[in-house]
Length: 636
Image (cartoon, rainbow, N blue to C red):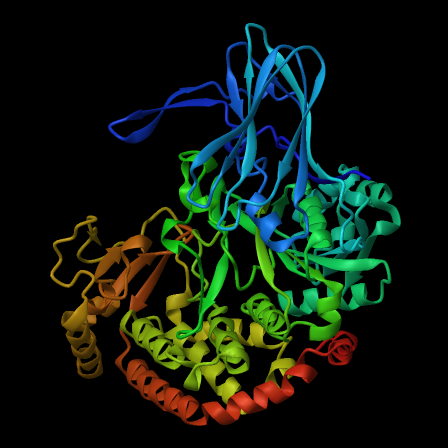
């Protein structure tokens, strides 16, 4: 029996920004050792359907793109598949060229065929030379007449290791329009639906998905596959825990596909992740990459890891992200051809085997932040790897236009990171985590950002109180954190009311190579700057005129922790550009919070071994199905 591993597809949206992710009809040259686009004849009119396109006479089109190249290294390393067949269907005179790459991105031609008329051209390929990385793809060159590409598939005759279906779980809070859009895309994808058991919408808001005008139609199309579950707002961890609990009761569900609500979906990605999991050598978590919903060719999350010493998440080759596929395609970017092994995958889209859920339990009652990373670390310790699979992705609003480290989410950033480290860190006393956490407090204090420090201290106090607090405040921690903002004037975003806010000394602008004497201090100068600034803020009160009106103005990109502290007050643009925040030095607040930061971090360091033992002993109960079912029932 033939099993389709991957379909060649074109975008569901007629969006020219998406074309570089699916097909590359551009010609490139090299000028002064730099790749330069010398022509761009990408035309949406040549895309004839979801799987077909016109190749104009004399043109060359490459399918060596993000969504249509075959990630051979991942299939070789993580699955039992070794023999793959590529079938390309065309009509008209054309030449088909098949290529492969290695882990360094070096291109090598495998085979070439000239075709005439209506033809299905077959290439039998072996996955045995992709240990370090590499893709396989094909190009089509039209002859004197235009040719039609009518579709292509990557298939195998090998049966999957496990052949069960998946249940999709979408957790939403007042984003019903996104959810309906996702449901409509799934309803129009029969090849995806045949792999699904259920689609669970866990609705935790008061703007209900099933109250939308389009819901009746999409519900009728999906039938009993769609199930709406309502519950109080228990955050992402509470919503995804409910998905897992519902799926555990479904005997036909072999995998659970977790998905955020505010996304745009490529349906083929859902199918690919399920099929990859079916062929995985061992039960495997299959994660998706994340593109920017508001800048769609840009890839923001590729393969993510947790560094042991600071116990902090990051993407591999983070300095090269985001990657803009409209500037450099897959074939031009060697870094993307390496097989990158992940520690975890964000739950914007992540497939988890039901076998892992039965053994590991449900997420921590963390509300948001670190629930996905902690779960994958827990899974890895039990022998379930995480694979962030190229060609499996969706579009999600990126973190470019927000800074959630200074809003109510600062509590969860701090609390959940430390809890995850208590559970999984192998370094004595969490390595450098507490030193890093203390530095974050100092940076916020020097920048006159007292609200996130207040939340971080609340988080540390809760961690010290023991693991029982996590379920107890699951439904209350977020509203309480938001309520604290009323005590801090800096949290008010001043919108443009027609009379712009102005600072006394005007806007401070920094060039890339700033000549500012305190710009980005390092080494001994960094230590001296930090010490002198802390002492200065302790002893010197701000000048009255700088309290009455902000002293200077900064753009968000210039408002770094080593620039703001030399001023008494500053007007700083909000991350999303919606207004401005006013930061003013408060000596009394600063002194109190600095003392509290030292006290809490010393206590955490002193009690770390005992706390780690307590949290690890409580882990099974915190993540158990029975405990979560009690939470669902009580709404707490």
